[in-house]
Image 1 (cartoon, rainbow, N blue to C red):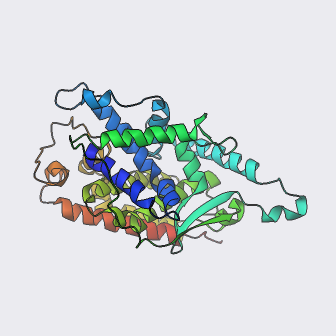
Image 2: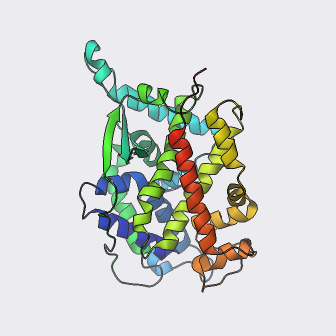
Image 3: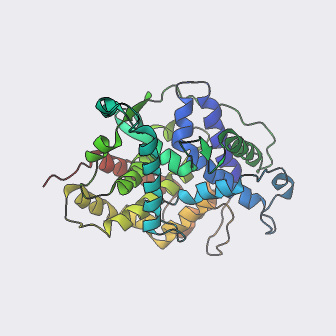
Length: 355
């Protein structure tokens, strides 16, 4: 699984480089998956468990920026992190907002300040794929000095790339990762700059703080990226893409569950639609204990749960079939794709309630 995920990431990066207009957006919208793979893969290679760790490969890993990678991996959990409360996450998001607004607004002469912008959006077919604030938050990127948590940006990203290259050999396949994907069919992705106060006024609920709206932008961008970009990377990488979808969807739904608990479920059309989605049987299955076991295997590579029966002949080693008797990986994958599309549409159409 480590090699599958690393080769998917490398194939995407290398294939996107053949399309200069596309390449930056692949990194901006999918970097959190690449960081997850780098962290979890490196952790597994260093494992002391028999038949799990690969010391010969682990010795080649550079851990100079391990703390940066670990922080990036934890951020992918959104609100599903036992070490960070709901309030802590929103406070962190608020700090990103404050930095961007202070850096990019209030600099022009007073009469021209309405022309300033502090939020960049990445859009395809009118669907949001990502935004500058979420990217900065996930990377720990400071817009004031261009560093990642105080470290040199190129040096950190070079270490991540080197880690992925080493992880790609985890299945003892020594062939170099290469560009095999045809990404020419991807929709055109454009960057748009806007003023955050105007944009956020039109999004979600009037009584949602901007930090919460930013969290919802993260989820919306992730879901649309998995719909618009990820399918083009599936040839030869179907199971790796499944893991990316499942991890993102699971953490998005757990975050939305926590948000729904704090706001009136009947307070607006958007909240009612959200609660209807969360009550869906497929959503509940993913959020159930067996569903979390599937998520765990998509997130972590070392299998420590003795309840999970392994079948090397099946996708994901038969983990889906093991925890969901009667279910197949293919049917579960179809449900994950459908839930992703439904959630993306819900967030795209969610407008403020005007009372």
